Image (cartoon, rainbow, N blue to C red; front, side):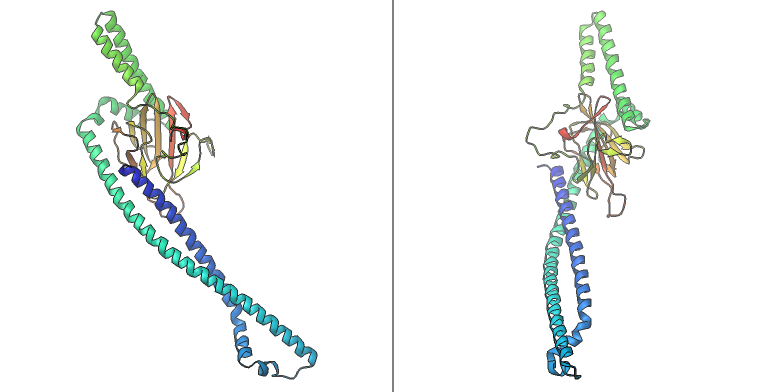
Length: 343
């Protein structure tokens, strides 16, 4: 397992353990509240119970009573004793449960601290690797070509995610058409080598910089290739304010690392509208993944990525309202398709 995959596994285990610790703390608070309530109910009866235990005859015979009232008093005392014993038993049980919870929290808290230290170390390793890859790409100048800048500019000017991908597709189609026309002109002029070269470049554009997408083998656990750990809050086709969801929305842990869901090239990397930091990855064969909602990016436009490479990380979140989410959309040409079978 590579460093980024190890980090994603650690982040998921950390999030799961943090949720368990939170549940244990909530249970601990509930038990303490119940223990305080039971103790408060018993407290007023303790002086009488203590006097009965030490001076039963004096307490019962403190004032002369008719026989019927004396018998009633004895029955009341017996009921009181049974109630006290029942409540004392409940208090003992809750105290035992609370002691067990305290032990569990101590153990799980230590595990959580270890996982968070491991996670921090792994994030440093992944961040350094991403910085080296980004620097190497810049040195090779492949991220600064005219075509890459045109693609990035087109995406920045878009009014929506769909418009961004449509503009990129239109630029590619225009480049492919120009090359095919150049190939046809060269062929008519009997320049075979020039025609073959132009046609090959046109085919390369049509193929794209990546291998395309194929569904994972049968039996692969669903979500195994998810770009981020966490839970799905909106699945493909789910109900949203804008209609059926055109992608998958994840609720990741705070600062979680986001990985590339395919091999290919970065068409766009930067802030976009209200989506926060966004990346568009060209997977080849006109498949593109859109990843929106990141807190910071570790990639540049034009950069070539392997599947599973770090793309960036989510914003930090301390548990208040407004939890950051990652929106993952897959487009084939100009059409959004369900990304789940490819993750």
